[in-house]
Length: 351
Ligand SMILES: Nc1ncnc2c1ncn2[C@@H]1O[C@H](COP(=O)(O)OP(=O)(O)OP(=O)(O)O)[C@@H](O)[C@H]1O
Ligand SMILES: [Mg+2]
Image 1 (cartoon, rainbow, N blue to C red):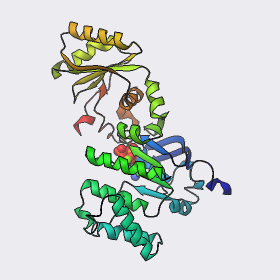
Image 2 (cartoon, helix red, strand yellow; image 1 turned 90 degrees about the horizontal axis):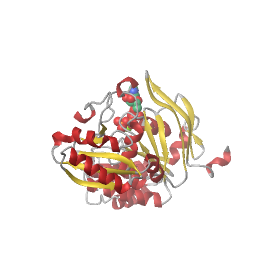
Image 3 (cartoon, rainbow, N blue to C red; image 1 turned 60 degrees about the vertical axis):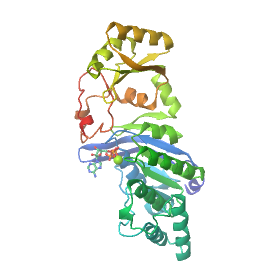
């Protein structure tokens, strides 16, 4: 397959499997990413996202299946793969005692750029990532957002054709996150192929051309943000409950109107239900039922499903979370839960 370098997808993954002892981190996943496209890999804690990234970036060997990066096999041609990829998200490339500028210049030299070119490339990246002011300070003094930008800059020194970002905005405040999204968009408009993992549905929605949803090491859905939303089918009615103590009562009062069990967001005291295409009729019925139950609401609205709804609809039907052999960290950031049914608990929310 010598011609595959210039044709075919940027990333091609077939039947990829990986276990760590008894934990099946990846149970056979297949996907491809076209050149210049962004694939969003969405999944809760422990889903297998980082394992997939580590295999595709040659850091971990798969137990089975194949993965090609621009036609180069990650197991058989790891050096050829490393020549064309970049990886950010672990700050592994950054030396804390060196300044931002020194870090980038040294990486340039490691990638065999000339001294002059390394200096030039570092300056370009510092400017692009708005790090010029901090360029001559040790990296250890950087804020979270700055460190993340330096890490991303580091992954770009060698101008990779295919870039992997493992949760690039986890832990950033909304402003820094928005800034990062802008940077990522610019990157891809320059032709870079990007695989991005995230737990944030808005992030996948904002950035990704295509999304795969991973849970327990399997792909449970794939498509564009819109096709995934269509899968949920129909509209959502949601509302806030004034008296938090009545949250369960509110959910019970509207359960008969919903196509699936009502979803409860305990943190924001909101309930949402799936009403198919009954539209405003469902709104009237919701108001009537809540009124009859004596539940006071705020901000009741009919809306299209969000990716958040998609995720809950998809994963809400999973068997109990404990018997999967995963590490029990699942759901750390998944606060909304379906009401009723066995296996409900607040484990995740407490972390
Ligand atoms: N080196 C390892 N040794 C043992 N188990 C591992 C190792 N790496 C990953 N796992 C397990 O494999 C599963 C998938 O982990 P992975 O890190 O790929 O998930 P993730 O989707 O990246 O999660 P997170 O969102 O928390 O980063 C988990 O159950 C995890 O505990
Ligand atoms: Mg991870």
